[in-house]
Amino acid sequence: MKQSWVDELNAAGAPKCTEVQKGVACFCLEPENLLPSVRKILDLEYYLQDVSAADFQEGYLLTYHFAHFEEPGQAVFRVLISHEEPQIPSISSLYQGAIWHEQECNDFYGIVFTDHPDLKPLLLVPEENLYPLRKDTQSQKSFLDIFPGCKLVEAPPAPEGEESSGDQETAGEETPKKKGTGKAKARKGDDETAQEPGQA
Image (cartoon, rainbow, N blue to C red; front, side, top):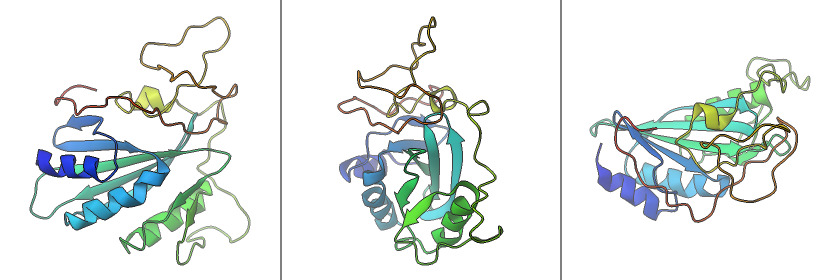
């Protein structure tokens, strides 16, 4: 993996890389930075491997994996969207292979990909809105517990009588009071530098 393309992605509007481990560079993006970052990685001739979703306390996490036929290493874009407004731009105009992946995420989670050419169910009965991979609040994990290196997300407030852990720093903004209903919030001005391999 070359540091040069990581720098180019930063210049394209992506926040600085939050993790570099074993040749994988991870970027935690705000939704509005997704398309500019995907355009840049397309210009660098990376191909899309997959798009997946997961349900966390703080919202739905979209994960985009990219790789290159000649350059070693992998780029990962992570975008967190709220439960209340599960909407994100489609990248299918840039990577046509994303059409199926985005349909699958819509099928299982109800995530809406704006400007998708044919957002219809792949496997489930149309118009029943089953969304079988959505979790109840008791089953949801915290995004920050699973990905402590991504610091664009505010931790939910600790229950009364409990203190927040040091890994879950907030930006001083108001946070939701109930698990599973929080909106993804970007922390402005963080100095997120690429970490050395082996660090979270």
